[in-house]
Length: 184
Image (tube, rainbow, N blue to C red; front, side, top):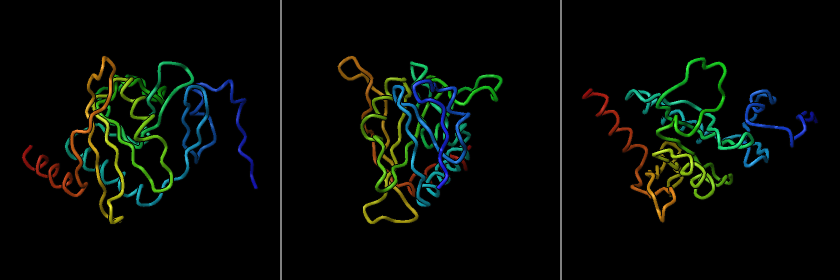
């Protein structure tokens, strides 16, 4: 068995994540290193469909974009993110502030929920990201479709929070976005 050699964890900050061994996905949650489990092929296929759908209508959508937190040891790595504006010198960045994003998307793989409905929703809301989609399997566990829970940022009791605006099948969104693409 091969070991994973890491620098001392207490010294890691967001900028160090890019230098960690490849083949893994990493996040720092308030200084705690989280190594993400590999995603299922359903997850990968759905991520590709969403990326292509959003890209086709001109969205600057990226896979695994790093979202920087307010502290040096805090970031999240959504499955997809739509970036409103990119800074010059892209090679120097592996994480951007929440203000750079108009949408983040988390895809929930079976048996590997990672706080998409709770902790991550609160964290993204605190960063001011206007829209948050949670994508999950359909009740019949279809290989070729997904439920997309579309949330919009609001102020609730003086604090930013997401409110679910609608739940759509990905196949319906595909059709809607294809129509947008054909009218533009």
